[in-house]
Amino acid sequence: MKRFIITLLIFAGIYTTVYDLKVGTLTLQQAQATNAIIDESNQKETEQKFTEVQIKSGDTVLSVVEQMVDGPLPVSIDRVVQDFKKLNDDLQPEKIQIGKSYRIPVYSK
Image (tube, rainbow, N blue to C red; front, side):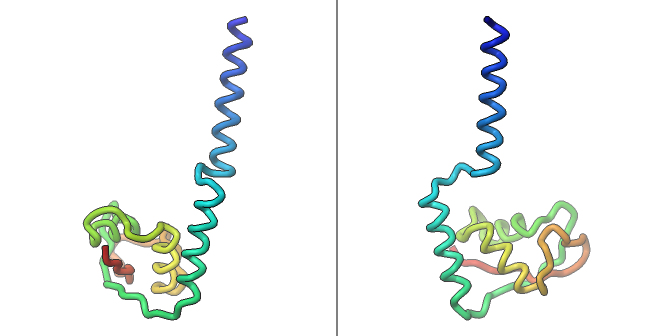
């Protein structure tokens, strides 16, 4: 009986992990609201403020933006990634290199 309960708990844990990774923890309504914000930002042709930053060891695009804001991000992570790619000729944030300078978007609180 103990083996059956342990097996059942293991399957339940695997199922919840796979479900969380595949679907996510956001409700559908929250995800749609996030998409609506991103769509609205894409339709606006505004000029993005940026600053040139030389990347040091351990820096990521998000960590640099958080340091400049001095706290939590005022926009979504997807927005930061999109703005970074737009400012740096579609360069993926994962491809930044130590010692090189990149345009980092600036956000106000």
